[in-house]
Length: 88
Image 1 (cartoon, rainbow, N blue to C red):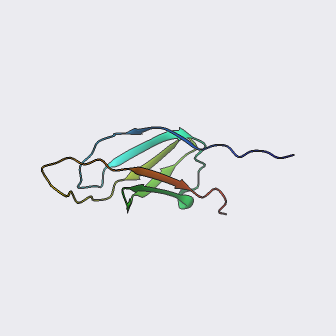
Image 2: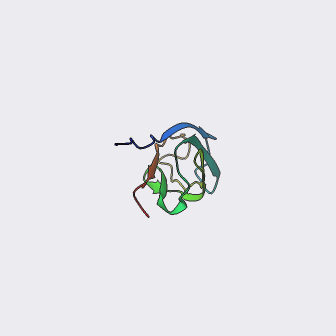
């Protein structure tokens, strides 16, 4: 019998604004994250965050330092979550 894997979903990120200085705690909420800290990767733009805790419904990270193109203008960055569920 084939059993489909649980689908990973992100429902919210808090806070959704922050300082480019980095080192701020951000919580990612959702479902089916698993609990393996070593197989969870979060990036802000192209910079890797430090993952500090993982549960099946929440991931905590410390944000990386971000260099603004123009310090007078706020920027938006994409947040990416990668979880390698096949790792042992």
